[in-house]
Length: 596
Image (cartoon, rainbow, N blue to C red; front, side, top):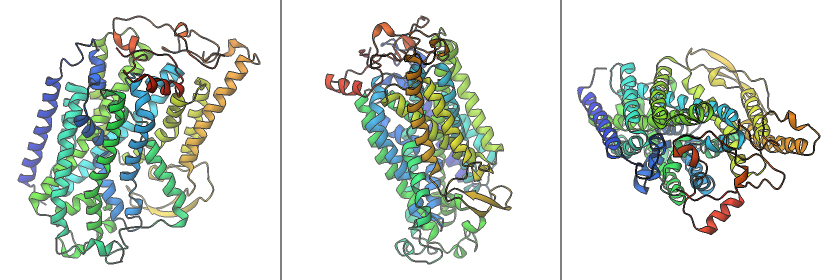
């Protein structure tokens, strides 16, 4: 394959456009929030809380519509043993946005949090917030690395250029405009990127459908032509696995900083909900061309194409079916449009994850845990450094780690089984405390890792009911190996065990300390009997009278010349009174504060 000059020019023009939009967004909003006295660091993290419906809808949709989303959807539709029935990402993530909008967006936004970890540190303390930061950070970094890796593989299919160089350039551009403009640059570039994804893929679909090598996809959906029907089916033995994976996507797609960064940047709690619903619709719409491209791949006689007689699945290239279809079933200029779409998808996800990881570190680890007196300028510089560090780490992993997808699978599972039940507890269950949180963390970690991870060659030490073994080809070595397959829905069971463990151990600790069965001096986490703890930030500990929180019970913090710490946990939207009252009934925090 030779280097396509037209393709390189198209990519260069696209990257320059993205860079220009990112810098323009940073310049346009450089004074945002100053009139309200908002810190610059908070403006970078949540964009001054003035993101409207148009930009907000696009950027929240781009949260999940990335390179892994469009490539993965096409791959599963194409694979003979899976098909459309197993392409769960579009509906799973769409439902996660709906559930997030219905139950999580309003309480998070109305309380004025800045990051997803704020409520954990408010109730469970800085150390527990640090523990929960670990799986959250792993998820963001490995996700960025996985999609950057997908970009390199895609470029290798369509344009024969130095893959490592292209990945590095893509990452540097995303890091640069994220560093300059924060959430504003990420949000405005998402509008351009999502438009490029939509146009690029839809331009490609008609050309691929009308290629002489492609059979009628309505026929191949139900009949065996070149492979089994792409509609797919779910065997009875796989029902629980299918449900387990679907719950992971639907509920595990909620506790991500990339999602809550958009929620918390909305101009109101109601807008945050509307943005979630718009993004759910956008996820479904953006998945349609990927589904069609996967169906086209399953309906193609590859012997009639320039690809060759051996189908991609037999070459272990099913994960690249989308760029392969663009390259071999479409004219060159059309495939370049599709390449722009894939590049856009990758950058729209990578910049969001990098910003999310740096926001959580700068605020929840550096500022709230170690440097409560840090100046706003200091926090901004910490964010800039960590944007570069986390972006560089993701890029290095994309280039040198062959198991980046396995790391992403495992970390996303840990987000589901550890962070989701904790978020559920901290927002909706009164009475949970740090002791229960620690127990829940341990249960979720052990039960999930105990099930093993075949992609990482991590053997299980817990064999759940219905487990079996099968021979699989290793994705790196190419050697056949025996792996353990868990047919039991152990991920969802692990999540439920984590949630129940949180509630049970919280109430047990509360009972033991408050009844005097265990001396108060052993409350070493200051989570039950100590009302004023230097360990737990900006929170009120559990008290006997129904866990109601009064102003006099607020723990003192070190003062600083910033509105962030003083108002972070006390902001309220100017919602109707009845809305606030309804929310307070489901909130562990019953203090009423008006939003500044």
